[in-house]
Length: 512
Image (cartoon, rainbow, N blue to C red; front, side, top):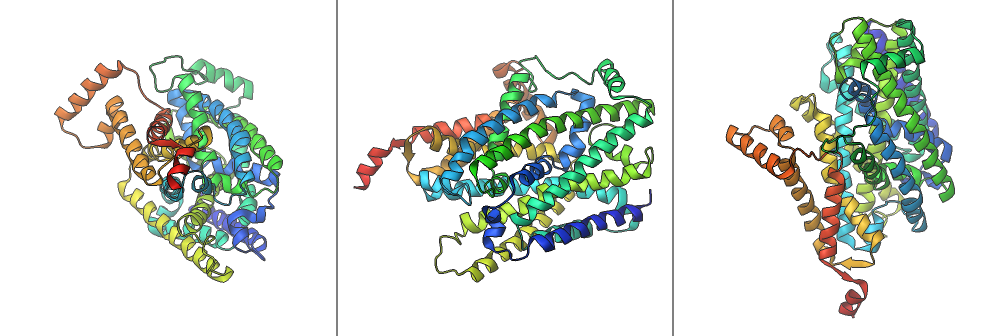
């Protein structure tokens, strides 16, 4: 299909988002931006969150993994579901009881100001890296398949996309995003379903017939029973649960939309409805991956991983309408994660770091001016990070970011666990050093356990490589740390907090 035709549909889609933003941002204020005036419809939030959790990485990468690991990703999805239950019935009641706008305010009330700002800073770091990496992945696909042929440079593509995201989130914030995410999730799921149907029709196969072919090819294997493997099913399920607790329940972006719902009960219904749907949607993505690999085998296409879906959808092997739906589905998967991250980072920086709600000297107009300035600044930061990822040009850059998430969300997990599970307190000045030391120790452990990963990413001498491999073999005997890296980091943080903690009564006596 012509690049200009695809570009037309992309621009038409952006125009639709801007129209929605125009109507939803009317009469908006700072509370609309930060928390949607606590009046969001729980059903819209639940549906929109599907798009937020299933970024462009999921849209492209999950189907691509089927060729190497089959349906094993579903082990993690089971863990996700268990994690959502914890978020709904442990964390959400806490956030509603305290009437939080920023969830990290809990750390201030429970531990102290340093803990509060430390939690917010770790969120800002992790979400900035994660969101811009996902943005880079999708912008790069648009660049390769549409805009390179038109002579448009990458930086212009990234700049325009960020400008459009900035335009439709600038005023309305969460109030607008609840509606745009709903629209984008609809297009993403439409693209997913239509692509599956088109592949089945092209291969003259049925759902059951193609599933039987996948099973014969070994693609449907779901559970890994090798306990030494990083993909061992218990590790994947438990790790998936803690990823959800850390990257959803302790993440301002994800929780900002949930706590914008007026009632706790409705917010919990939102969480459980969304988590149930997400299980089915991930299964459908895995089935799509199986279909793509069957299609590639049938037509002798030597393409794997992240390149598989884009090449088949945009390479002319399927009808032109599929190319359009793929592009729309891809950017629909991108935007809920990018626009939500931009809004949440603005909210966290304004409320947690700058303290605009604590500053009584700021009126509504000054707070709005500060918020708009911060929002624009994060958009510029997103552009800079996206360009850095382009310079690195590492095809496994998402793998790097997911590993970094294990380091940055671990301290958040440890801080909230300490606050919720214990009645102890800690001298506030100790929190930041602990939250820096814990990820560094986790990094050292990961380096010793999994030196192969670091050898691929870093330039190390042959002697250092052999030494690391020898130490790893002698200490771990083939056991590989996988998805549980986040848990290890959280546990180390928690243990250090416990070691340096005191009972509340002791602290109270010292203050007296």
